[in-house]
Image (cartoon, rainbow, N blue to C red; front, side):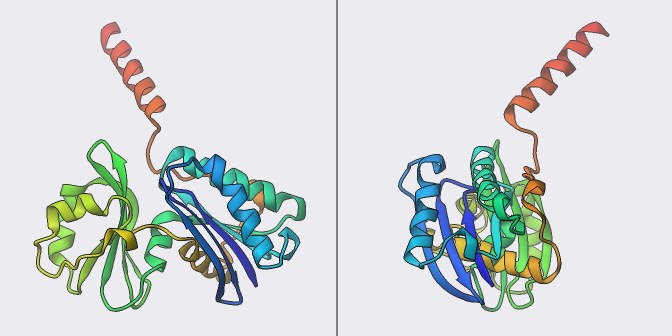
Length: 235
């Protein structure tokens, strides 16, 4: 099975192509350009380098969330456009699960994305079994203390919010350091997670690809605050 996977959930962009479990190609970019500028050229280069076209792709994997609202929409729109002509199945992948899939060994990985406002989107996984230990959600980094203390295995943090966790828990027992260069998301993690979803029958048609933000957007929060203030004034 040929899987084309993209990761646009954060500031970095990544594209990978996996064939029958073997990674044929991966590109990772953290150059400061927007995903709208870089993603389609990266996909085009990937396919041409591997001697393939969209007709050869059996499954698309893409981050559905959490992550940057704009980044998620760009990735989902691009994949939807590529998959629609042939109705190629798609896997709407959890960004945090894909981050965990990039790592192996014995221990616990806590995946964290900077959600601003003092929070991180986070989830935790057991590396040996791939078992989920914490559901995807937005939480204050400081609220993870009980989970960190209760970990029986070595624990490390990845994702663009990992530094927020290390700032608080780097001295905690059992916490291991991860170099910043190895904390980011990769297309290979999205591809591996997409493959597992396909095996579990969790793929969707292109038209059903939808973002899963896990939190209201800034505009929605501000609107809710205005409505609440107006309701208070009326009372």
